Amino acid sequence: MILGMEESKNNSGVKDLTKGKPHSVLLKFALPIFLSQLFQQLYNTADTLIVGQFLGTNALGAVSSSGNLIFLLVSFFTGTAMGAGVVISKYFGAKDEENVKKAIHTLVAFGLTSGVALTVIGVFLTPTLLKLMKTDDNLLPEAIEYFRYYFLGVIGVVMYNICRSIMNAVGNSKRPLYYLIFSSLLNIALDLLFVGAFGWGVWSAAVATVISQVASVVLCFAFLCKKGKIYTVNLSKIKFDIPLLKEIIRYGLPAGVQNSVIAFANVIVQSQINSFGDHATTAYGVYSKIEGFAFLPITSFTMALTTFIGQNLGAGDNERAKAGARFGIIVGVLTAEVIAVALFFAAPYLIRMFDREKTPEVIALGVKQIHTVALFYCLLAYSHSVAAVCRGAGRSVVPMIIMLCVWCVLRVIYIEITMNIVDKSNIDNIVYIYWAYPITWAISSVIYFIYYHCSNWSDGFGAPKQKGQRKRIKSPRRH
Image 1 (tube, rainbow, N blue to C red):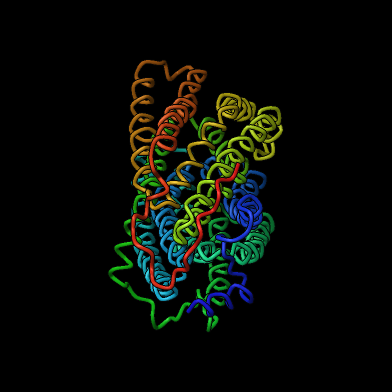
Image 2: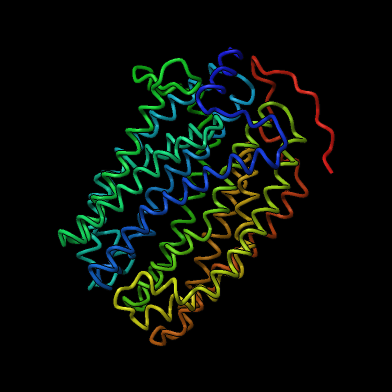
């Protein structure tokens, strides 16, 4: 069993993160994840950028208005997949090949089931959900069109994230990158063809995204179905293994719920922003795309950190896990603040890139939001970094509770109270909504700081060593 895993490491890109210097291992593993995330972001941004340039401000607003709603419906399943990857990491670190295989097949079965359910929900509830978000009447017809076509192929989005979680969990962060580069370039080419050359509506941008995402899933499965590997997916064995499903739910469900509550809070935020008019909706959508790119290095590093912690705690090396956690948190916070300063000064130029008509109101609102929140990215990075450590340690309930209480409940309460006090006819008062983010980031960071330094988070799995796990000598404390 152990021999087979060693061989797979040598010839399939699988990487054991329990060996080598934690700093260098983390950085090398995180780089392909960052590049993958970068191209993943191109899916959404290509639609926004090309639609804004060829179809105008209203079409741009229609695409932007659906962003948080898409994230709300998709994030639960992608978050669960990310958390479930901890189960695979744990057994991989413990050298338990049998449970690695069972967990992989159970996760694939979960993804297929979830993708079908999400397609039905997204297609049939589109108009109702967009109206509940107070989407402007001028934007509603095209927003419904874009949303429905997107969800006809959403199973591709879910399954790509499942495949990526599997490959990342066994230390292979390069393959998802290769496939995503191809499909991202395909998406851009199809956007330019459908929207730019053919002059089709916003629905064609969604179709381009779906085609490209399905292409990446086909490539992922072609790789995962190779025989004789630790990660091999045998189509006839795709089913729910009940004990492994329970474990995946235990570690993955809190991450899915966490993503969903954050997305729900953002939908409430967008609903209030929509009430300020279509320019406010468009500006918020553009800012969201820019923030998505700006925060990619931190998101990528926290994903790598979760896998690193999972593998090393699975192997019983708590001290190595702690050293990686310290390094990851410091790098995340410092990187976020460097990016924040650059974003602060480049704000006007970045907003203009998305709007062909260079609408002054859209540019002014987008710049105002960046100037309000960007310099507080260090707090957001700290919260995400500690949450990643918790997930990797099997304590995914902790970030779920913190995000639910602070980023959802508290944020929504603040916004509802504020919006009942201020005058919505004055567009300048939208800044009070923007402040909801730094305030809740600060509160969650304080809670995470207390938890990280006062709890014994590294004992999160709390289970005896798995069969086949090699005995490790406790590493000396690294200074």
